[in-house]
Image (tube, rainbow over all chains, first blue to last red; front, side, top):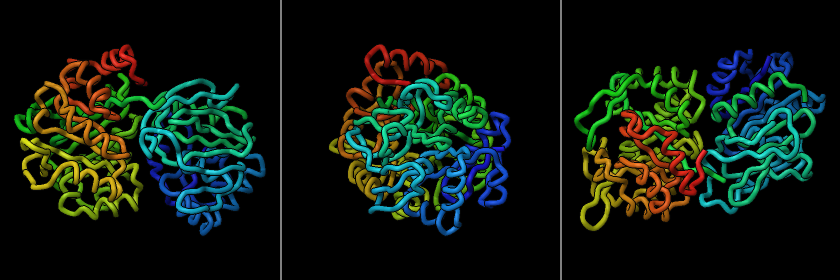
Length: 198
Length: 250
């Protein structure tokens, strides 16, 4: 069972639709007991870093997610959910994150627009069981993750400069793009995250 | 490298896709959900649904349509037409839309852009602007192009960006439906004046028109309807042509 963490941030309709389409059972809940019973968890999210982090803290989901990762359980952060995995973000002043993967969230630089919107190529760094091949994914963001340790960069994408479009540390993965909106390429990543060992 | 986006537009009236010339003489084109799946399979980068009736009754139909599309189409899609309030936006996003396109309501109440952007994020707020050349500059028209306003298009678009719009959907009413190419002058001007993506629309008829919109108009995306609905230019053919001409496409 896949558990999508409900903390009121982000449009999760397309995620649940994607899992239904893939025929993979999933629940959407903010209840820690229900989420504990899941095999793998997804942390979704759109919008700004600080309000999202505030909600996680208020709901005491921050500690829950940190413990989940510390136990070596599988977690996928999507878009803002990926950025929240890092230590801190520069968005609207410095805000602490979940600090599961050391690093910073910084404004995206060098692109033609201040928001990176559209389809861009994801290039895995070495072998990866969840993101095994190059492909196009749909991005919408104006900040990007910069892991402190280069070995945590699982894939890169170029918008002006190269940035980490997939990060991984052990059982925790983050993707900057929206797999649920990236057609076959994204659906394959969601399917792999749900079933593959890593 | 970020690719140039091709976006089919589906004008929806009473649950059917329609297309007219200069916003009138509407003819039916087919079932929206079926067309959405077809375009997604053919390589459309996004879809836009415009509810051109935009009445309370048709709103219910559109919400149902959005729910159906979201079940089987896994590319981003935008819904526009008659969106007046934060509740309207909330309802469509909850139904599965990724973005909403706001036009007349933003002209009547510009604060809606600030509020919507703050509440839902700039990424899902597309400001649609219908413009017409007056001999010297471009004026904004509201209500599906039927109501000319004494508002300068470029001023309004810049204000829209400042207020929190995440993208601009720019339609030249002079070119719309003519299939004689998009208005490159206004498209390029707007593209250079804002730092958010510009979707060019109105007038696409040939492969070269797409290329010009990107190369000369500096658009980030092109939106078209009839060339796709009538299979005049299949999406795959458009993308191949752009690729051969050195443009990045998916």
